[in-house]
Length: 168
Image (cartoon, rainbow, N blue to C red; front, side, top):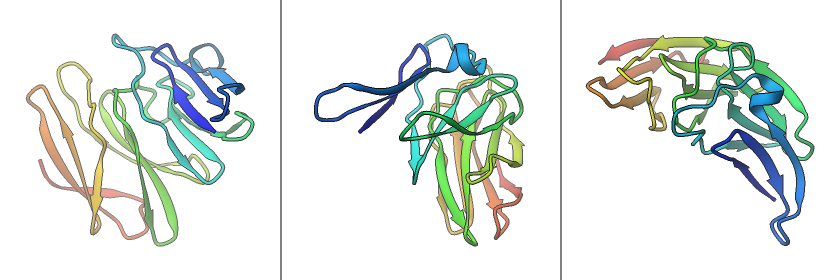
């Protein structure tokens, strides 16, 4: 199967052998997503039976849907900000999977099993564009933003429940 989020907010699954649709979701119509100037550009994260997507809506900010059916598994309000063109990372700490993504003004850490927002950390720039994926190594999370903002290094607590800024 192939999974894609179009620039117009169409999240879908197609059969790889013949391209037939398995399911599709209009994340703007169904989840209140807010499209961006250059459209959605997120590379989807898939883990087990879940497809994660940063919808960017005020209520349904980040969602997880079943990769076989497209049915909603969980929704996280996050900070209610628009998406920021980036793609998420999935980190495992002490048996907990944490989905890390960036919205307009915050880096978010979300429990990938439940959709609970574990932490957020402010990271802003002039245009709310953060088109880079977070990088994780040895308990440290690096995120880079353009437009004069630069990079930030965060230390994740061993269970992924919170972060502290190391440098900016």
